[in-house]
Amino acid sequence: MTSLIEGGTQEYGKRAGTENLPAIMGMATALKEAVSRIDKNTTKLTSLRDKLIHGLLEIPHTILNGDPVNRLPGNVNVCFEGIEGKSLLLLLDSKGICASSGSLDPSHVLLAIGRSHEIAHGSLRLSLSEENTEEEIDYMIKTIKEVVTYLRNMSPIWKDLQEGKRSYVTQ
Image (cartoon, rainbow, N blue to C red):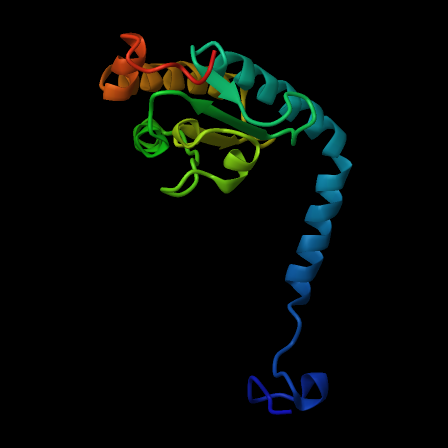
């Protein structure tokens, strides 16, 4: 077998280099610290997540993806009818909110759980951490409501829904 990296005799001459012991010890310490706070962080994240979900579901024709309770503490995933996720992301980013909506194609996971292509295109995924605050959640709710309203007001699909030319998929 040939060496991938020339220069040392570690690993019986097959790999040069020395293990980065400071980084290994640092990772071990970080993992111990994270595990010691896991219950406290889970409680905080669950509370923030539930507040965010509740606030976003106040937006008409919005649906939660996944179980409302049995989900990761820092995970929020919703779909907004009548808008495109990419437009939503661009506007949220300009307001300091980092989020995801998947690729240009609708999420295969959302399609697999029964969401239509039309609804899956309006998905928004937010991830929270123990560093998030209640004030940030309030800001996200307020800003996302404003952006969804803005996008819907210029959407021909939303106009058709409002005028009854199309049927709503969500309730």
